[in-house]
Image (cartoon, rainbow over all chains, first blue to last red; front, side, top):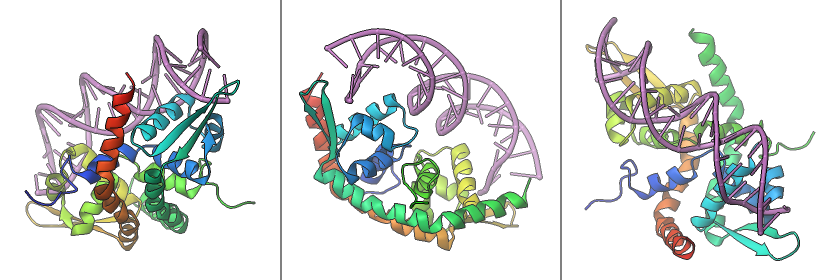
Length: 120
Length: 120
DNA sequence: CGGCATCCTCCCCGATACTG
DNA sequence: CAGTATCGGGGAGGATGCCG
């Protein structure tokens, strides 16, 4: 055996990336990190997510042990989503990306403009 | 005006996430970070990527100013991909994720097993 | 070697309607 | 309020073939 190779399909990095590298997972993770939130609050907070996909993504996050889903027997029922310690630690390692995005979005836009100006 | 809101569609974080949160971008970024690599070397290094998608993804990365594409007029032609400084800085902010994956893949698998055992 | 063109398939996701 | 059920279109991406 050798050390896990990030580029073979079954190594931890690949597995985790396959799980979180989609349109909404990271965004929801950071949204719930702000504060525990209810379903429709998340729906409003994260602009553009459909109710179906929100439901699916939250279920995946819950299954992976990254968020908790707490049901309160009010009428109507109240459901609150919050980060687990595991989810919180993932969110912390992802947080620098938001910082990087703010700092470098202009450089990216510039590179794109340059690239597009070159070749038709 | 207020500070950019990560959950509105047009904020930097959303834009960057939409660009890199796909099946292959992050993986290719870290692969090229190891050392500059040629097309087919990347193809072999990153198990499972098709030639078409590799080509597309590299083009996007080049357009965003994250990798360079250098053509050497040998016969047959040699093409080498390498990180730009911008790409290198992004790769550095993404690197902790690989570390986190190795450390927590077991906890995730455990959570999944627990979740699956509960409800049919 | 490093691609592009084409075809085709799958499944992601949005829209809509309904429920406890 | 917090979902599930169902349908359907579109796009990502795999397979194959060809080219400079």
